[in-house]
Each structure stands twice: as structure tokens, then as C-alpha cells.
Image (cartoon, rainbow, N blue to C red; front, side, top):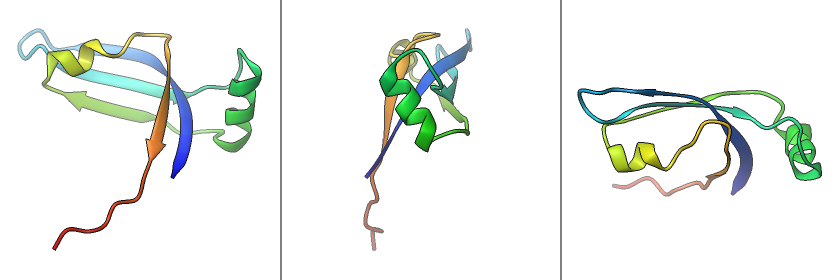
Length: 76
């Protein structure tokens, strides 16, 4: 597993579907933990889209989130 830490840069809501897009960038400062994450995850962006209003509501601009990448086995 790889863990990264990102913050929500922007949210674009779609009034027709209630969903939208979430744009995240890696943390770079603000705490010792953030500086450590920046040391190992210096760049990149995540762009998530959803039509699920409840999922979109979980994100807040400026807030920080852990992102875990866990390898899965390919299904047959």
C-alpha cells in the first residue's frame, strides 16, 4: 500500500445531477506531517468525478485527505 496526502483545491458542482468534480493536489506545508508527505509525493493531481451527491458532500475545499493506493488482484 502507498499512502499520500492531498488537499481539495476546488469542487465543481453539477446542479443537474447533484454530483460534480473534485480536484485535489498534494500537501506541501502546514505541518511536519505535510512536509514529510511532500518529501515523498512532490507532485501530481487527482481529478474525481461523481454523480453521487452524498460522495461529493464528503469533500470540502481546503481540507486534507489521505489517499491510499492498494493493489488488487485482477478478476477472472
